Length: 172
Image 1: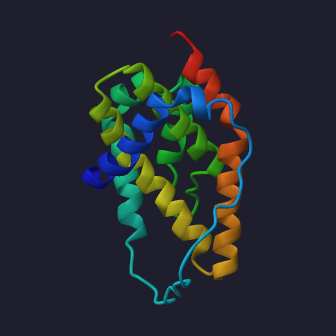
Image 2: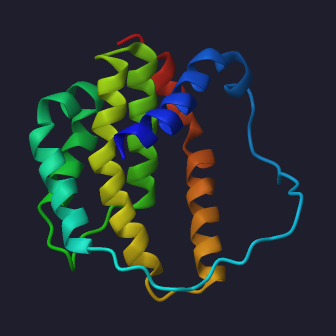
């Protein structure tokens, strides 16, 4: 999981860092054309241990407390600590909180508040928490439900872009 996070999130954060003049001035988004045949994804249910995902999220938040406090705002960090103490039936890592988490991690990466690799590694348990919410939200959903939720998450990233810009340009 850490290696995959380095390849994907590391590349994303590095791209944000190197291309600020370009992406910072763009607003909205446009559909991207797709080529080739659409692949049907089988609806076979994969067995995923939801309790294990919650344990990895909760223990990550607890063990990485000092690291997270150097990356995240006090308010966001406190909210993660709060949801880390929820039971499996109450647990939810809301999309807006996830969006702000990713943005604060990107800002910390840009500012190199700590070692950049450590920043990426610290995102892993939080990703597991968001994955748990994703699985819970989509457990009984159709492909159309999944598509709507993903579009809504993308809209959150667009809507909250000013939050990222504020973090990015803050001199702290």
